[in-house]
Image (cartoon, rainbow, N blue to C red):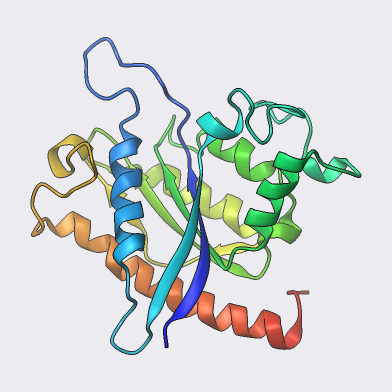
Length: 222
């Protein structure tokens, strides 16, 4: 029987405008769809059968009109949820989704070599107790050749502080438009850079199952 993992996918970009030179309004949508497609079809490994019950947390939704955090805060992180005794229903539901997850997948661009503001804000609105004792996996991307790897290093630091420990394998997607169609389909399945994702998910699932068992048997991480 397959183990079901509750997985939250964080989108790190809030871009919604086409650049002057053309292209996608948000290049990361291709990467996000690719990751979602992988989670949808994922069956684990030959030793661990897994399926993902996932939710996507997108800053354009969360901070947009009628979004889960629009009522109490904004992208500037004006009101961390853990400062409030009671949350509005939508914010409370989002907190429950994040806190109830077994693992996290972060899809992020690289802005000035560091964590993008939308990602830092959306994750930082919720305290470390929501994330503690669970693993995370980091997928970065860029229109250039480096695949956002410099941002990945700073995202690792943020995840360590929040308590959702990142697995050692990273997934960096360079020159996104050359590798992925608009719907997230790989243009060439043989492209070696795209083979990073399944290898990273192998680690994420192994650790998520182990940490889930430990939380159930020993309680929250001290």
